[in-house]
Image (cartoon, rainbow, N blue to C red):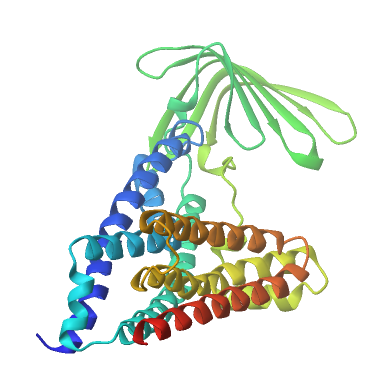
Length: 363
């Protein structure tokens, strides 16, 4: 077996474990989130097709959120398995010095960091924005299913509907519809009967035998009676937010917002988002250095399992601190400079320790 294959063997084992853990954890989180997002159907009136597309598009975001933690778990899991099977010890029999493996793993961690940055910068925002576009372009397709008897229903933004009775075929009885029209006043529709019908892929609410009361911004009340009124449900504004979150902007859009909102809290939010895309991934080389410590000889009379556990906890704390600092950037720009200092300090401390350990091994 060639030296290159032996050196790459550890990385390949890590990638297998990483892919397995990402699949398992992402699937669990995705299922949990998919259950929580059922409100998009039962409360916001979206179709199951839209719900399926939206939840599926959340997968890249979920993977990006768990990627660094999974890297930590997969690294220690891989090294622990290789050590328990004595595969790490056999490396020296092929004339490969530990420091070569050390630099090979460290180089791989920077490549992995670059790949993760690309994934977070281009792939995740693309799917986030498209998931929002799906919700914004979809009308209320299951309006009747949102209406419950003897209850004040809020199927859409600025609209409240009271319904006394609804039979199995969708006929509605004794309906009160209250619509708040912002500064223009409000409108109340009272009808004895009603139904929801679909025509040419559009949903309509038909109300019969009732009256309409309108109150304008000046407090003037007007009232008219009607035999039948058809209302286009697609014109109702859904409760789902129709604006993009910062996490749903592409890189170019984030940079534009950064330039447009000088000395504004929005700019701090953009800085925080950009740091989440770029800077936070640079904690990975430091995590790799913590894992590499397990290659060294234990000359400190410390239980090896305890040492590994402590190193793992330190890695988890570093990830947690990174997330907290990035979050605080939305409040104060000083946390941005502190985070850069934090990443550099942690890396060089770990690098110095690892270098000293492998120097002692070679001696």
